[in-house]
Image 1: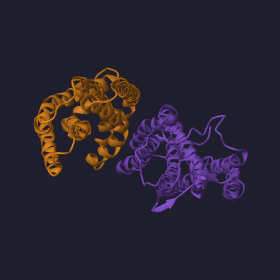
Image 2: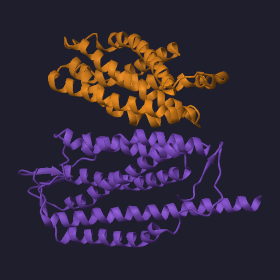
Image 3: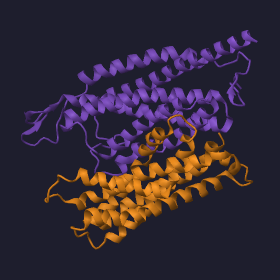
Length: 207
Length: 265
């Protein structure tokens, strides 16, 4: 799964290459880099989340997990953590590649390492919401499309906050105000969504 | 306790009582409520054009290009949209609150009746959400001169719209009734997180172009408040009437199915 996610992310970068090929030299890619990076993360995570539960479907693995004499929320935490780690691993591969292909000619602001904070917060949220939704969609018809239909609107506020936080630290701007507010917004949304997913997971996984 | 539709095993079986809550007090009230709601909204429509004073476009200083016309200090006729847009939006959120309530009730009791009610609430919510989107889009076009802006209220409401649509796509994609009910309830509860966000975002992010309307000093004169309140209460009554009519139809359908099953046995 890791390799297919990494290759998919790489292919998205290649598509970006074609999409941006006619933009010319006046084009300020730094302003767009946060948004493009997060679009890449969202699409890659969709792929990973779709597959993460199809493995559990093989050989009745999910039934085995549900037989474990533990609270179902433990299953949620375990599954969300593994999704989180997979996403993080892909991001570690993709981030340097992204820099290599698009940003070597630019000079990002010296505050750019701060982008790791929204990245971490955003990935936690994506893994939390995504785990619940992929559990729901795994036993439905047309699950790949359905996951995207449910996942993208739900993750939108998080995406919005993370994009603005990332863009501010990379391209410059009001770090005190925008960065802090966006990260706080993302953390708040994470908390609400992960807690809600945690509470509701029992119902979703045993249905 | 009313007659329950019980879920047993994988299939949905109906308890063989004829005690589904049809024809109770709320069903008797549904028809007058719908009529009164229609009257009130019609009255609001008339009031909005007769009593409510026209609003002068505050943003237009000098001459600006709005909708391919050079416009000076215009009297905004399109402001009349507001008297319907805002009540419809509030009412859509009321309907979705009903969805969340019945979803919690379903998860607590596993009673398919609550899933049915949650579905009906979402259906009505979808109608009003679409009305809000259409009236809101007309508003952005004729008041702000653009078709769409990524403004906080618009954005959060757009994703609410998408999620309400996704709710029905999710329902259509699951075959087993029990599973469908559970998944729909779980999703509608996550979806509901966006409703307070969308409602309060104009307070959280004051840069938003939407004014905060629900406050004691909203700056609205009584002649503007009258059509607004008429429309608000009218739409609330319409939601109630629609909900009861729809619930009645669905419950009668369940009863017919149950009767068919009894005949088959």
